[in-house]
Length: 73
Image (cartoon, rainbow, N blue to C red):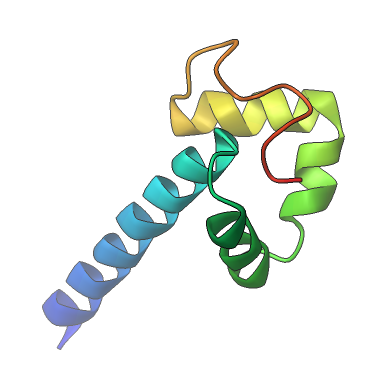
């Protein structure tokens, strides 16, 4: 029912957030490729500094730890 569906959506969101936080540090090329598969526009977001900073803010990634131009590359 709706309760199970809501739990699945919450779990998927947590997993996607963890994936993006990890990918934002740029230490795993395979994970970065997987993130691009799940979120095709992530490279557009990441290549423009204001949107990259906003994404990091939404994810709770501390300033300066997003890898700058590295990560998601």
